[in-house]
Length: 248
Ligand code: ATP
Image (cartoon, rainbow, N blue to C red; front, side, top):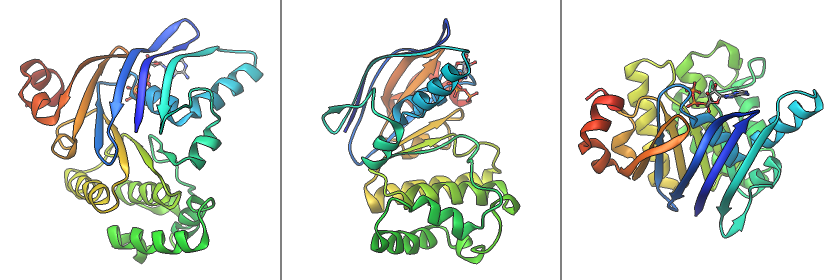
């Protein structure tokens, strides 16, 4: 479904993604793990294409130069130069780090904004589905995004991404800053969404432990490079990975 080959991303002269190749299988959840600054967000922004907007903005300011090399093939087409809005139309949807919901808009408005590219009937159907997965959001329909708890904001961010009719859903650090109980609930929800809808998903997380059980295949990044990869069982068994990354 998605094939990343020899991907390199530089910020000015600093390398953030170093020769990463990865295969994302259709209908499955792929994990991307690694410490702070390992390159997870850069990878997610490069797959979604948001990095190209960032690059343009920087260039307009006359500042930092971002360089992206390699190939990203999605459904048989190399998309590495494709605008993020065109990628979104093809179904590549990023749910960004730190959620980025609209703080002054209500839950309902946030969800509707997510569904702007969807047809009326898709939007209606997906809205019902989002409220089934996250009943709490239904109760909070009129609440402003900024007044939600961290966990509720994350539910909203995922709900908003679902409204955009993703074929490939990119979740960047969905568990960041959440309580263990909320973590558990979200892991279950993400698993359920994948099982029920079959949406291909990539989850980037610093803490692999709660995510590993629902992942089909995972990559561990270090200094921008993929140092280990394997099925979740293989990753769990790898002693270096266990001690260094999973706190097991
Ligand atoms: P985090 O968990 O902190 O988000 P990450 O694994 O997502 O970490 P990235 O944010 O992709 O890592 O960062 C990878 C490297 O690129 C780091 O060394 C970081 O300092 C650098 N970097 C990220 N964004 C920029 C930027 N806009 N300009 C310059 N360097 C950047």
